[in-house]
Length: 422
Image (spheres, one colour):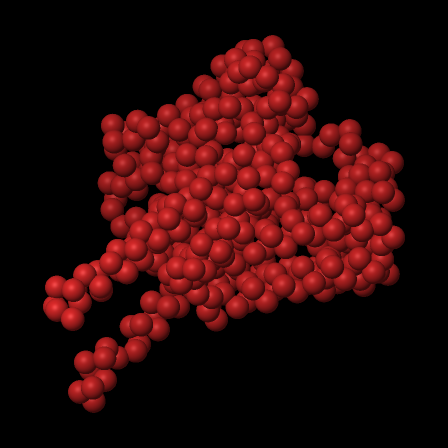
C-alpha cells in the first residue's frame, strides 16, 4: 500500500469520527434545548434522550469512577421507588411515574459523563442551549400572558404565565439557571458589550414575574444574589468589584421599575397582591399543605417501603409538596435516605470547585447557586423529583467534580516520555 493510500485510509476514519462527535454534540444541545418544551408528555426531551445516549455510546461515551456516588445513590433512589410497588394494587399510573424518574436519573449520569470527556466544550454547549431555550420559552410565556399569541390559553394557567410547560411553578424555576448565566455575563462585562445578554435577562425576568410563583421568585432572587457574591469573591480587581456593586444597585433599581410598570396593569396588580402573601389559604387549615406534610412524616415512620407514587394524594387529597417528605413516601426509606446523602455529597463535592481557575467555573458557580436554592428553598415547598433542569444540574455539578479529579490525576501521572526516562 502506498503512503498516499495509507494516509487516506487513516484520515477518512478520523474525519468520520470528528463528524460523529459533532453529531453527538448537536444531540446534547438538542436535548438540553428541548428541556424547555414539556407541555405534553412524553415530552420531546424523553423521546430524544435514549437515541442521544445510543449515539454517544457509538462514539465512545465512557462512564468512570468519578461519577460513581451519583450513579450509586440514584440507583438506590430508583430502587426504593420500585420497591414501593409492593404496597400498591394498581400499577399503571405509578409505572409511568417511576419510568420517568428512571429516565431522568439516567440523564444526570449521562450529562456528567459527557462533561467529563471535554468539560470546557460541553459546558459551553449546555449553557448556550439552555439560555436559548429559556429565552424562547420566556418569550412565549410573556406573549401568551398578554394574549398576543394565537392559542394563548395553552401557555398560561389561572392567569399565570407558564410558557411551554404544564405548570407555572415549574416554568419559573426552569428559568432561574439561565437567568444566573446572563446575570454573571452582565456583571463581568461593560454594559455596551452585553446588549443581547441584557435583553435576554429582562425577558426571562419578566416571564418569571408573570409566572406568579412564590417559590420561583424566591429562587430567582436567592440564586442571582449567590451568583453575584461568588463573582465578587472570585474577583481580584478593585475596579471590577466596584463595577459589580454598581451593576447590582442599578440592576435592582431596574427590576423595581419593571415591577412598578407591571403592577400598573390591573390584572397583574391583583394577582401580584394575592400571590405576594407568604402563606396562602391552601397552606393552612384542615388537610392544608402543612397538615398534610405533618401527617405524612408520621406515616413514613410506619412504612419503610413507602406508600408508592400518588398514594399520599389519594389519602389526603393533595400531593406532598415537599421533596424531603416525597423521598420517603414515594421511594421508601431506601430512596429517602439515599436522596439526602446525594444532596449532602453533591454540595460537599462541588463547593471546593467554586473558585478553581477553570474555564468552566462560571457555569459551575451558577449551577451551584441554583442547586443550593433548590435545596434550601424549593425542596420544602414543592415536589421536584421530575424537574428535568434539576437532573441536568446534578449532571453539571458531578461532571465538574469528575473533570477536576481527572485533571488532578493527569497532573500527578508522569508523561510517557518521563516514564520511559525513569
